[in-house]
Image 1 (cartoon, rainbow, N blue to C red):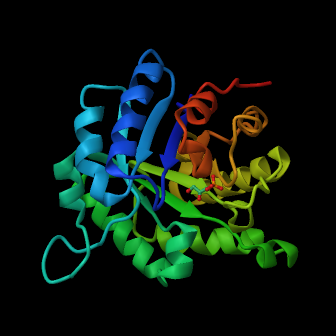
Image 2: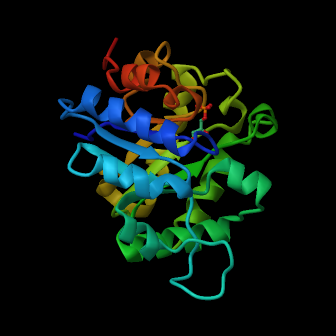
Image 3: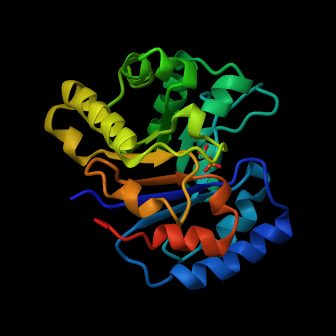
Length: 249
Ligand code: 13P
């Protein structure tokens, strides 16, 4: 069976001391959880302090983005090797905020996934439709294009997919459990075309206004394998409640 994967995407939030304080309390609270993969993606500038605090714990360090070159004259960018070097296990790639504000195309996302995998990083590859896409019934077309172009020439090893409908991100408007399950089932079918039976092993997690109140019903979907949590991951209490979701309720 697929092991649940719950990750925090802190986006551009917190200070160093808030990061230290959060992680100190958090790791103690979740230390006995053995049946969920847990990751935290703080901003780049806090990766070092977070890595120190997460050492020898059951919480993995993740980054929010990466560049695709190994090294060189790319002012402001961070390479996959640098992330490995600092202790990251995963990196978020293709988040809709990067696509929207930083013009990341499917081609750039594909290059980043390839580079991250080559360096040995697991990838949390984000896809999802806008409200306009959904209202014009183009959700599946958008997902298909993002999957096919993002994963072009990529095997399934180390890939976690985050289905994040753009209209649900930071809006308090979560997808219903039926909408999430429908999209996740579609994504798994696309994977079956690409990867055959390996599709059953790939974790597809949901993101978009996940809270302690809605996590149980979202996780009840048979193809929903976890969550990528923004706002509700900024407080230890709410993030821990999400990690302690009840399957099947
Ligand atoms: P929110 O949980 O704040 O809606 O953010 C979701 C998200 O974008 C996670 O990557």
